[in-house]
Length: 417
Image (cartoon, rainbow, N blue to C red):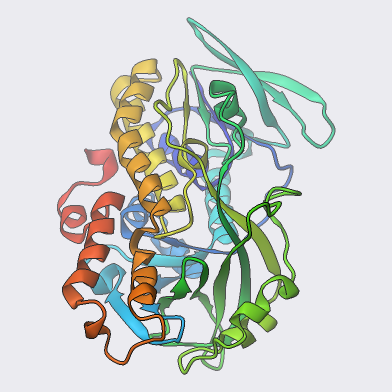
C-alpha cells in the first residue's frame, strides 16, 4: 500500500521522512524537474526543530543554519521596543533556527534520497487530478513544462502538499478563487554584512505599512554574516499584485528610497538593501481557513492547507508539524480515511486560529501599537507600553502557535502522543 505525496516542499519531505521512519511506503511527485536550493531565509520554531532533531537532523541543521538567540522589535526611528531570548536561551529544550529556505528543502530532499532511494520520488511530475474508489486513489500526472501526460500513480491515500496554488485544494474548493492579499508587497534579499546586536538576533523595525525584518543565516569570516532581510510596503488600492508570478525579480527603485533614512546604530539598512546578492518580490498573501482538509482518501498539508502571512515565523514550522501528526495518525489508524480524519481533527482548528492571528499581525502588533502611541518616537518605552503588556502579547502568540515554553518542554514529541 502506498501513500502518494504531491509536492516536495518542506512539509511533504518531512512527511516522507517520517513515513519512512514508521515503515509506511510512499511515493512523492514534484512538479519541478530539478530541485535547487532557491529562495531566501526562514525561521524554524523550537516545536518544529524538536521534530527534525527526532529525525536525526541536528548536526545537518547546524551546518546550514544558525541557532537564533533573540528577537528584537524597534520603532521606525530605530529605538528598541522589546527584546526577548529565543530557543534554548529562552529555556526551550530545542533551539530556534534561522536558515535559508532552499538549503533546508534541499537537505530534506537529499535525506529522503539517501534513506529511501531515488525510486521514491518522481520529479517533473505535477498532480493534474485524481480518481477515488473503494480501493484507493489514482493520481493523474502531467509534465507542466511540456504538457505531456505521465503514467498514473496508484495508492491508498493522496496528500496534497503542493503549496499555496495547490491543484488538490483547487479541486476540492473550486469556488475559492485567488489567494487573499493583504495589500502589502515584500522585497526579500540576502546580503553579506557585519554581525549585529547579539550576532544571532532576528530584528524587526517600523510598522505593518513599512517594516524591515532581518536576521543572519550564515557565519562568514571577519565577523561578517549573510543577512536575510525583508522589506514590506503597503501598496495603493488597485495595485496589480498578481500580474506575473509570486517569485519574480525585484527592483530597488520600487522600494529602497522608503528605507533610505533607516541607518541605525545597530544596522545600516540602506547599505544592506543596496548590496544585496539579489532581490525578489512577493505579495503578502494567505488563504482563508477551510472547514475541512480531509475528504475521503485525500487531504491537504502545509501551505496547501493553511498558507499564512509570514508573521511570527510559523509557515514552515506548521508544515513540519503537519507531516509528523499525519504520519502518527497513519501509524494509529493505518492508511485509511480514519487516519486523515484524525489528522484533520488534531491540526486544522489550531492552525486556522494561527492563520487568523497572523492576519492580525501576531506578535508584530507591538510595532503599530507603539507607532500609534508615540508617532515621533520615544525616550523611555515604559512610558509608551509597559513590560507586562509587551510580554503578554508575546506570550499570547506563543500559546496560539503552540510553542509556549512550559507546555512544549513538558509534552511528549508528536510521534509519541
